[in-house]
Structure formats: structure tokens, C-alpha cells
Image (tube, rainbow, N blue to C red; front, side):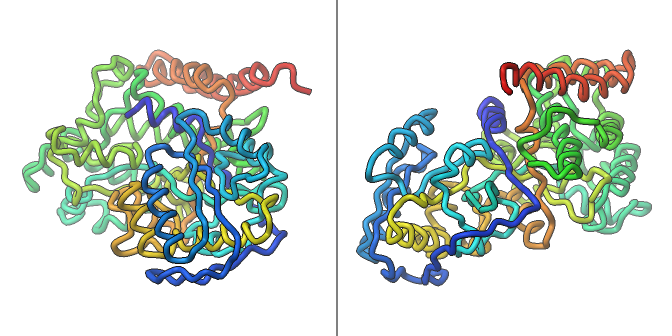
Length: 464
């Protein structure tokens, strides 16, 4: 699981900008949620699918749409790891894909001549969070069709029980909506573990699950937590949130330090052993020993798998943002994907119109929504995925709720990290020493800031 997720994180990009695209008018489909499709376009649809595991579901969906409308829909799925090669090959043919996937801003730049502006389409209008797009060259070049999210997983059953105790810092979980409050709650829980266990019948040992800095866990902090200062710095500078900059200042590293110190001090783990490899944060949380655990929605399957023997249940689980003390009132979960639908503007107009109608049907019809959520197991970022078609993943549900409430999802800015493995390793070393009391925070800052510039230079050697 870890290898799979880390691999995804290294290539996924969350392209969020503050500039609205404008340009071509998109087609408007006529399908209403739950209804049948009407044929209003005379063209055909050709999708080059990115995810091999969804191949059968897409082909069945295409067949259903063709049966309902008479519109020809062809699906070609690239082999795992061969998408770019397949895309280049298919785009060189006269019968090119009308739907293809771009994974980040670099891909949008590569295929800029082929990406249709989706700004005025139903697909874009149905997004619950308009930041879930790739903006490039003053247009919406891609719209996310699924996403992953991460933040602070919490045991809401225990946390709600704590809120009902005498002397609790807050009386409702909803009051935990900023860093200062979260820290006060975590501090209080960690200092009252025995009292909470006696009152609630729990088995707590700590507020936060251990912040392991071994190779199997450190990516949660050198990648996921490090994303927070990068995101806010890039946002201040007005640059592409997933393209990054050659140099960073570390403006928000004090906030990083505050969060990290909370993770370490409000845990039962010995700070001198964080890199030992003997810690298992997932198990600590899963066995009800911790209330909080920084990780992502991919953990839902592990935590609810009965074969793992964990005591937490699906009803216990939820997720809150990594409150960072910068813009907590507006912050959502950290959301990203490598799956953005792009429409080929070099296709005949009738094929473009047919393609936009097909995609609208996919995200509004019973058949399409069932396929996305229940057959493909994806979390879709559209306002049509409610009721039976809402994701069953409690963490993704929390993300959708924050989006619906108008919160801004935090982009995966760590995707801009130069020579990512080397940079992270160089940050983890002083972070480990600082936590153990044998190093200073200044060393962490130096590794973070100077290390970024050095690795950026190495990564871009030879470029003009």
C-alpha cells in the first residue's frame, strides 16, 4: 500500500491557480441526474483510459450509452505505465482520442495544442471545488475525474466522548477548526489518558499516533506535512502551486515546527526512537490507542478490513484538515489526483460535442455514477454524486463536505519537489536529530530551504 501511494504521490499533481480560464464555449449536455441520455450530437467518442483496473467498467458503460443514444463510444485502455507512450501513438493517427488524461501542468503544456477549454462546460460547472482543474494557457485544460485526500484522521467516537467530559477544552468536535484549538485539545487528551479511559472504557495511550521517521513512515512528514509550508509559500508568490520555484524562503516553517512539535509531544512514542522502524502508527490508531493520525483516504480500507483485527469501525472514522495556523478558516483537506479529463480540441466539432455530452451523462446518470463510485471505486469531485452515489469512504466524504461548505482544498505542492527522494532524505535527517534533542531546528530549516535550491539546481542542470 505504501509503495503504491508514494508512487502516486510522486507523479500526481494538484494544479490550482487563481487565474480563471476563458476561451471556447463548451457544449452543454441535456442529461438530468438519474435520467436517460438523449442523442443531441451526431459525432462519436473515443476515450483513452488511464486506469487499467477500470477497463471493463468503462467498456460496459460505453455500451450502455451507445444502446441509449446510438452514439458510438470506443474505449482504449493503456497498459499500466504505458499511458504517455500510448497517447503519443494514438494522437499521431487520423482517428485520435477525443478524451484523454493529463496528469499535471507539464502534461498540459505538452498537449496544449490539443486541450479544449472546459471552462464553460457542464463538466466544469458540476465540480464541487473549482480548484480541481489544470489551468494552463488561460484555459481549463483538464478537469479532475477522481481524487485522493489526506489530513488528520480522527476517532470521532472517542473525540465526541471526550467532548462530553467535565473540563474538556471543547464541547463539540466542530469547535476544532484551527490549529490553536486542535493543539489545546491534543495536549489535554494526552495529559488525561487514564481519566478518559476510565470514563469512556477506551484503551488510549496517546493523543497522536506515533510520527515515525523510518523509511516506511517518514514520507508522511517530509512529503505530506512538508506540503503545507510549500503550498502557502507558493500561494503567496502567485506561482503555479504544483510547478514550484527554484528557490524557497521557508516563510511558513515555524508553522511546520508547531505542528510537528504537537505530533511528537502529544504521542506516547519516545522522540529518540522515531526512526527505529519499531513504531506502527496505523496499528496504534486502529487499536484505539490514539485519537489522531495524519494520513490519507487510502487508509480507510486498511482500517476497516476485518482481517487486520483492528477495533475501530467505519462509524468511528473521519478526517479533519492539517490545521496550520495560516488560513484555517478556509482550509480543506489536501486533495490531489493524476487523473484529469481533457477533451481533444483537434477533433471534429461534432465529436467534441458528442464527447462533452457523454461526459456529462457519465457524471449525472444513474448508470454513470454507479460505475464511477460502486464499480470503479473512485471518489468523484462532482455535485451530482450524492445519496447512493456518494463515496463510502468516510475520509473522502469528509473532503466532499468541506468542499460543499466552501473550503479550499490544499494543493499537492510537494509534487514540485526537485530530486524528491534526495531532498526528503536530507530533511528527515535533521528532523530526526531535532526530535531526539541532538540537533537544532535551524538545521531543519537549512535542509529544507538550502537543500531545495541545491536539488533544484541539480535537477535542472543543462536547462537554459
